[in-house]
Amino acid sequence: MDVDTRLLRCFQAVAEEGNLTKAAARLYLSQPALTKQIRRLEDQLGATLFTRSRSGMALTGPGAALAESMEAVLNAWDRAERAVRTAEAEASKVLRIGFLASAANEKTQEIIGAFRERRLAWRVELRQASWGDPIAGLVSGEVEASFMRLPFPNQEDYRLLELLTEPRCVAMAANHPLAQRETLDFADLLDEPFIAAPAATGDFREHWIGGEARGGHPVKVGAVTEHPDDWLTAIANGDGIALAPESASRYYARPDIAYREVEGITPSTVALAWSKKTKPSPALADFIAGARELAD
Image 1 (cartoon, rainbow, N blue to C red):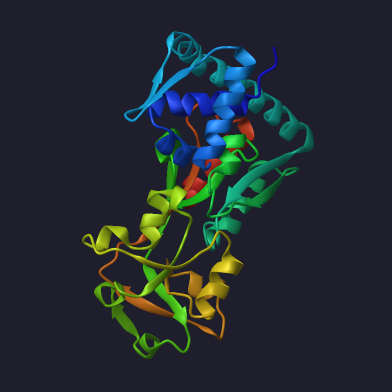
Image 2 (image 1 turned 30 degrees about the vertical axis):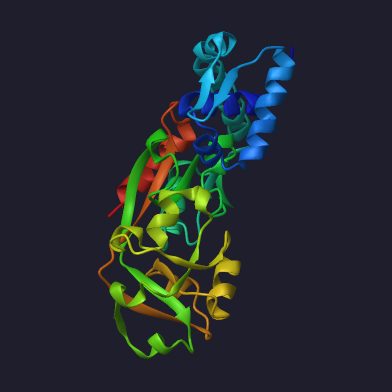
């Protein structure tokens, strides 16, 4: 019997969370889509895996038997998939690294340069992730590591090398009344609509709407975006304001957007992230070594 590993990962998430809503958020799926995946797996296996109740999802006897093997099965597949990708990278001499927005700012090219000094015939291929699913490339194995802004979803599953920390600022339409001030306090922004990442990104979204500094004050969401261009357009259109790394004023400068200092908010940290599940490939180990030398 051939079973799609995506179905097994859906089963594992529901089994571990014991709740469809939490499992769906963890997988960046809608609850109906996750329910459909579980039913597909049950149909393929010819067994009921969960009993559904108001309290959540409880494993049946067959479900518990499957759950006992799940970690070993998926870990074995992950190792095999990464071995294939490592062999392919060695053959093509290409190291694929993910990134969000401005990656590691000016350090990005310095780190790539340090890697090339170690591996003269190699090149680094950068692949941009969306804010809607920032770890997609890491989960799929499409990239071996990624430049990430902390915090990000399922961060505990990855090893982190912190590279730099910078203040956060606030971005707003250039004609916004608050743009007349050079420095703002975050308390002045609590009632402003914010441009936010999708809700499924959890702590990542909370960080960029200033959740830790709100003291329980609810956020007004003016728009939800997943890519820098959409984010910039929403800000310029006056759909809302947004917290941003200070470097955004350099990398995303536009005449219709104003960046202002903001007090009362924690800084932003960039880290290089890679999986805890497998040992880094020799090429990735060299990339990490170069990044470590250049970290603040």
